[in-house]
Image 1: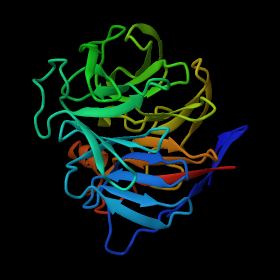
Image 2 (image 1 turned 180 degrees about the horizontal axis):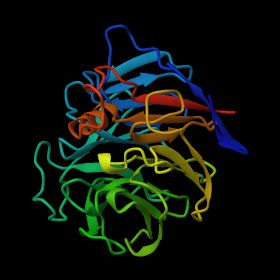
Image 3 (image 1 turned 90 degrees about the vertical axis):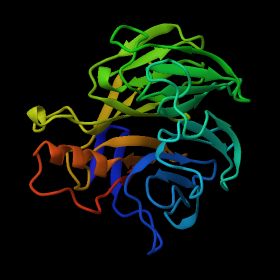
Image 4 (image 1 turned 180 degrees about the vertical axis):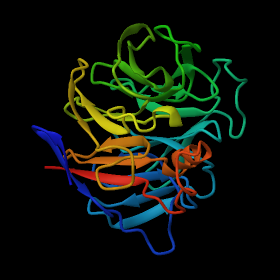
Length: 318
């Protein structure tokens, strides 16, 4: 199965990951790659962080003692991992071996709902390319972005609930480009908003559906995971996702990947986390079980969702 156009074409690689027989995951909240192209799968199974080499061979797992619900994963330029746990209301800075170097937020203690104070179900992390200052999108119980120093000291926050520029309706993912501009996937407002490093609104991209996952590669190409319909009323509507869309930093659309809603090769259910390795291969994590359970409650599926449904895909750059 091939997806994409021009120089952005991909071959779907089914069953790339080689999990030990006793391992499993229910859903994948975030994915990341380090400088060796090892792949980190931050998931909601009994082994929250599972690590593979570039060929899909299992290396190790960790995080069983402290993660509650995997949501977002960011790999810094020094191979330090920033793991966002929305049920624990924390961001943990970890080594690739799972040593916790710093925790931002108070474990199991949310800030008041929509208080704009860190954190109430935070979602993802981005780093300033020069200072390594930390941006956190927050999230489900807030409508804010928080900025911290590299040491975890809170600097300031911006954003509130709403639809105007600078407001958010589930800020779900966040990245920075080489110039330090901040891109926020404003999921339920169906847009990506762009800010300077002081939180000033600059621009927004539209013409997307439930912007969910973001990543940016070494060439400054931006990859966006979009979720499909949230209701049965337009479940069968074509050309709204779920899919992966690829953009230039000026907002020009390069191509879209995905053949519709489903579990077949080339299809997606809910692209929730995304990353790209040094060869341009794309790894997509999906919260398949949650999304399918939600649709089942809306009577849009015949029978309950499958117990084991694919929630991770590799798309190999051709």
